[in-house]
Image 1: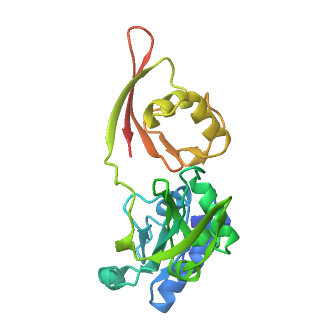
Image 2 (image 1 turned 180 degrees about the vertical axis):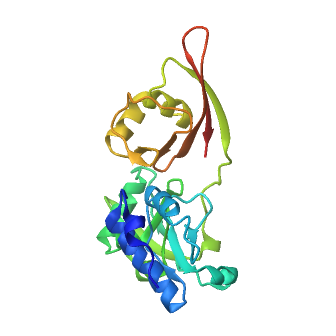
Amino acid sequence: MYLPKEKILFKSSFPKDLERLLHFAEKALNDRTAVWSPFLSAQLIEEVKSKFNNLSDISLLFEGGFPRAERKRICFLRSEEEINYPSINIPIKGVYIKGNFLFDRATQNDFRDTLHELQAQGDEIGDIWLIRDRGAQVICSKKCADSLNQKNGKLREVEISIQALDLSEMELPFNRPEKVINTVEASTRLDAIASAGFGLSRSKITTQIKKGFLRLNWNLNDQPSKSINIGDLIHLEKKGSLKILNIDKTKKDRWRIKLLRQ
């Protein structure tokens, strides 16, 4: 059984990635088995949801280790098999990278780079979050977690040790509830709205935009001055998303904006 490849790849922002995922989907259909993708970025996941939305033969299930995970794996399976999903073995585990970072703070990207140095592949790694000054915990594939277990190393000058964990043993990030934010701004510029919604300074937002960490409607955007509109979705890596619910002009020629932070 084959899926409509040309239709799915038409105007795709990630044609090579989608073609690879199509192969997984067709394998699931033909072999009548669950097939898991590597970890995928949030923007690629959104495109997959859009492109596969109207396919009746295949079901897609998304797992990132916890509800608000940004990076997730996709399980492809025949639609009639979805009812058996609870019995499917989910190939996700975790690791705890332990170290004393009280006097040498590290970021998520620092820990990701360290995992790469230890031969962990990028698509085996999901979300990373800091555990105060004691290191970081990481969602990854079971294979990756088992290969990293009990390894030692250094992150800059800090000695680290790595311990594999089941998801039930992890100190998962706080599941922030959705929140409606009302703000009044001088303009509808992207940097102004993102600053108000994410609670970061305009300069920090501009830096994030220039580094490619912010996407508008899942498209990379490098223009801080771009105007936003009702219905737009602003996604900032590791900070979540903002949906523009409403925009009104005030009597003083300012803009009253209603946001949904997700």
